[in-house]
Image 1 (tube, rainbow, N blue to C red):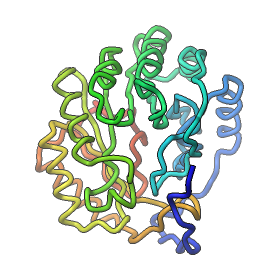
Image 2 (cartoon, helix red, strand yellow):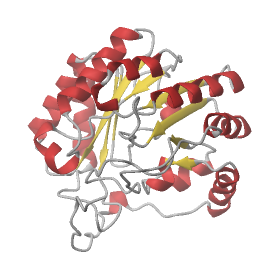
Image 3 (cartoon, rainbow, N blue to C red):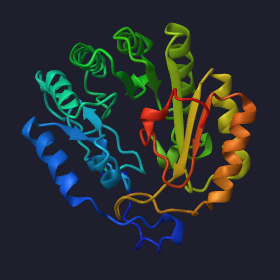
Image 4 (cartoon, helix red, strand yellow):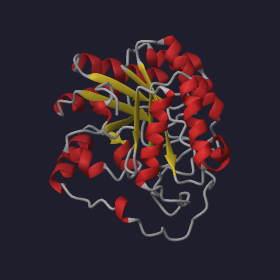
Length: 295
C-alpha cells in the first residue's frame, strides 16, 4: 500500500492521568496463547490498546475477524495494511465461538478490519461469526463493531439479521478532520449506517464513538454528539487518542479528565442512554456494562 501517513516526531510524555503500567503478564500470556492456537486476532493487540493487560486479566477480549490486514490507511490506526489481504479463513467464525466459550464470556465483542476488496465487505463472514457465537453461547450478549461497508446498507442488514444485541460503528472523529484521520471514509455515510441500523433492528442498541485529542474543538465534539443523537444512537464512547506508533498521527492535545466529565454530562442531557467518556475509554472497554444502566 502506498504510504498514506508520514512519520512524526517522537511522542510527547504522557500526563500523569494517562500512565497505566503493563502488568498481569501471566493473564496476557494465557489469553494470547489461546488466541494463537486458533489463529485468531484481537483489536486489543493489533491496535495496541492501552487497556489490553487489564482486559485480558479480566478475561475479556475484542475479537477482530476478516484477518489482520486492513485495506484502509486511517491515520490513527496501527493495524497492518494491505490492498490484497488474501482469502478469508473459513474456520474463523467457529474458532471465535470456541474461544469465546472457553473464556466463558457473557458479553462477546466482534470487530473487524476493513475489507474493501470483498464484494460484500466481509458482511457474510461477520454474520456467520455472530451466528456461531450465538450457537455456542446462547445466553451471552453479542456486540458487533463494524466497518461502514462503503455505505452498502444490504451488507449492514446482513450483519443485523444475524441478531447482535448491540450494533456499534464508530465515527472516530469530527468531520473537519476526516481527510487526515479517515481519508477513505465519510462522516455522513457513517451516520447513515447508524441510522439505518436502528431502523432495521429497533430492538438492538446502537453505539458509536470518537477519539479526542486529534485537534478537534469543544464545539465540534458537542456537535458530533448532537449528530449521533439525531441518528438515533443510544450509546456514545469518548476517549483520548494515543499515538500507537511513529507512523500514526501525533496527539494534538491531552484532554483533561474534567473535560471528559463535562462531555459525559452534555451527552446525557441530549438523551443518550449511556455515555462512556474518559481518557482510557475505548469502543469495547468495559463493553459488558452496556445495558446495565446509565454510565
